[in-house]
Length: 111
Image 1 (cartoon, rainbow, N blue to C red):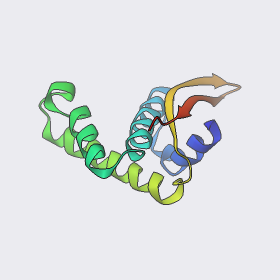
Image 2 (image 1 turned 90 degrees about the vertical axis):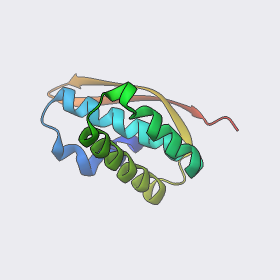
Image 3 (image 1 turned 180 degrees about the vertical axis):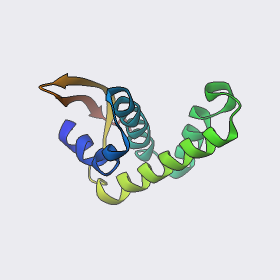
């Protein structure tokens, strides 16, 4: 699954310039990936809860931006990675030989 997630975020990696930004991108990608595995009505609830004022503060621009990013990533997952139905439980990004190494823990989604 690590390679699959790397391919999933590949079009967006150029937007990151350091390790922390890449970790943030991966975090958003994992949220979108996991949300995409649920019916659309539940997806909407997940996104609304994750990006609510209580969680990220009272910045409507940030809420809108994060929601747009997640929506785009969910669409990408459903369009190009629909056959992959595993939940991502955790990930670990490390620096290895002046590059990043991604390790992903996943499991089958419970019914």
